[in-house]
Each structure stands twice: as C-alpha cells, then as structure tokens.
Image (cartoon, rainbow, N blue to C red):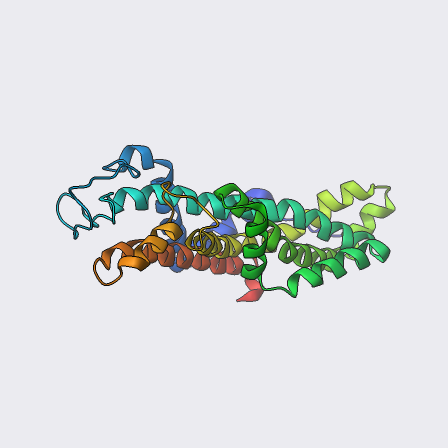
Length: 287
C-alpha cells in the first residue's frame, strides 16, 4: 500500500513564497502597508514639529521648505499631524478588526459546528445586523457610546463582527464533514480539539484575507467617524478630523484637505491590494 505524505510546513512555506514572488502587486501593497506602519511606530521621532502645538504666526501657510505640506488653520504643521494621525487610523483598523475577529469567529464556529438552536439564534442575530449598512451601524453605536477613538474602535469592531460570523460559519460547514474531521471524531477527539486543530486551522486563510480587507474598511469608517466628530477628538490628530477641519477652508487652503485625503486613499488601496493578493496566494483556486 502506498502512503501519500502530506506536505511539510517548510514545503508549504516555499510554495507560498514562490507564489508571492510571482505577484508584484501584492509585494507592492504589502510594502506600502509596511511603510505606513513604520511611519506610525516612528512618529514621535520623525515628525518635524509638535502635532498639536499651534503657531499663530504661520496660520494656513502654503507648502514650503519649512512646512513641506503647509500648515492648518491654527498654524500646526500638516506633515507632523499626518504622521501622528497614522497612529490613530492604523490602530483603529487593526484594533477594530481584532475586536470583530474575537467576537465573530468563535460565534461562527459554534453556529456551524453544533448547528440546531445555536445556529438558528446566532444566524438570525447576524442577519439582522447585516441588514443594517456597516457604516450606519458604526455611526449609531459610536453616537451611543460617546465620541472618542476608543469608542469608535469598539463601534467599528462590533459592526464588522457579523461578517466574520458568516465567514467562520460557512467555512465550518464546509470542513466539518471532511474525511479527516470524521476520522478525528472516530478516534475520540473532543469537540474543542476538532474545532481548534482541524476546522479553525483550515478556515484561517480566508479569515486572514477577510481581516486584511476589513482593516481597509475600518480605516475608512474611523475617518468617517472622526470627520463627524465621533472618533479622535481635537487637538489629537487623525486623518478624518483633519478633513473635518479642512472642509471649512477648502478654497483658501486646499492643501489642508489634499494630504489626509491622499493618505486615506493610498492606505486603503494598499490594504485592498494586499488582501486580494493574499487570497490568490493562499487559495490558488480563486485565481
């Protein structure tokens, strides 16, 4: 009898690396994401000015050698605020998705694996939440919790959790009847071991791709909440709050709106490119 050996972890890693090298757009998206992450982490050391200190003699100055991206309505350096604002926007994206994954994935696994009444209750609640648009639900929750970056992240995370409930449930339903799961059940493996060792491990790639794409949506949501005054509160910098201030001076100082708007666009585009690339790399059948 011939025994077929499963690919070893180094072999799988090698195949994934080869697929990644054949996808320059994925490398480009990941590189841009890493640049923004590095900027956010190094913000206190690379920002040329204090992001919240006003300079009354430099109000709404156009881009110059002293202020590369100009100054805002109270003379604060836009480049410095943009660099520090990356901390709020990226933290909102990562933390919000972390909350959504922590809530949604366990519920989806329980609903898909055990079924019956647990599936009925979780699925109906999830469908009710999905019936409300993501951003509208986030705005409602943020308004209920109160204006702050922390509450905005909680609101975005709760609003995004139904997406992960549905995805985890669908992956569980597809995997739980597989032969290797039935074999594990036949040799006496418990429910928790089957869920963690077999189902969650096989559901991880699509969950990772969805998390990457949801970070992009969370960054837009955080910018929207900050624009509405429900996210990061002044004078702390945030790309959304910078746009909120810039809208009042769009004709006198258009550079106030260009920089944060472009930062949001590039970051979201990079995360979307990275997510699409990871989907192709982790699941070649989707190409």
